[in-house]
Length: 388
Image (cartoon, rainbow, N blue to C red; front, side):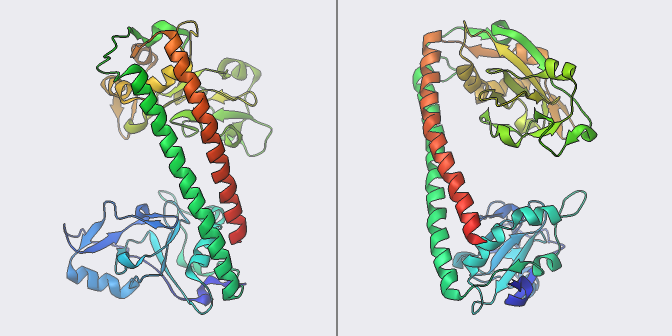
């Protein structure tokens, strides 16, 4: 074991006062938004003049093989600088780590630092944005086996990372397959070329939209004895991401009865930033009594008229999002819709037999996605354990 600061030539951060810069300069200044695990993007960079670059480059002198770690905002993402990006400058939200190659391999160190993210997040402090100090980075304890063993670990982890990337690509392709099948069966919803009936969403509901449960932060618990609550960050792309990781809180029997979710309910964001307003999900796979929070609404559909999988896909479309934008009440940093707005949404309703065919297709694709997700999750766990 060794302190990170003792096996590195330098650990520093970027500019604390990033200049406004100029357009179309050859000198880039990146921020934490550009750093992902083992990946550095150049989306929306700042551009520096030659003079500004000289000043910043004297501080950091980013070289190929250096490590970049995010230390403000999303803490603990780590990537190795590729040759093509040597010479970039950085904002204060990113630390530059220059490992001593005679002691530690840079990719071995990258994987080990990535495995420390949860610890780093727990150590982050701040009000507007949490962050960690360079001293905390330098004081991290790092395992330093012989270099030949480090190389073997890196070969294994690089192979696992490659497999994870392949399966993540498969997940993306499966999502695209569902979208393509939807268009093939139903056409573009705006043009509605097959002339399917169009009805108000409220007319096919059996349970009208209901706002969720509000409880103060003091009602939330850290153990497993509270009731899980679905919050607006708990679902994406029409599905709840993980029922096992929902936050829990204390609520009364009356609250549980009033706000209890049931299978095939649909939840929809009623208050959020404008880009996430109307984000929705179908409830499927409940494992225990679960309630939903006040920033969303819940409703239930008449399954003799529509299939909830089909309708959820419609609600996740740009066709519906455009309607939501026309109904949104905008405020500072957020927007909202009400129950009447949701009931007034126009939805295309094909024959139920076609909706069911589409739902069956989605179910088959979801089986393939589940396999890919489980493989990627297990590979991530294996990579994390192997890097420790």
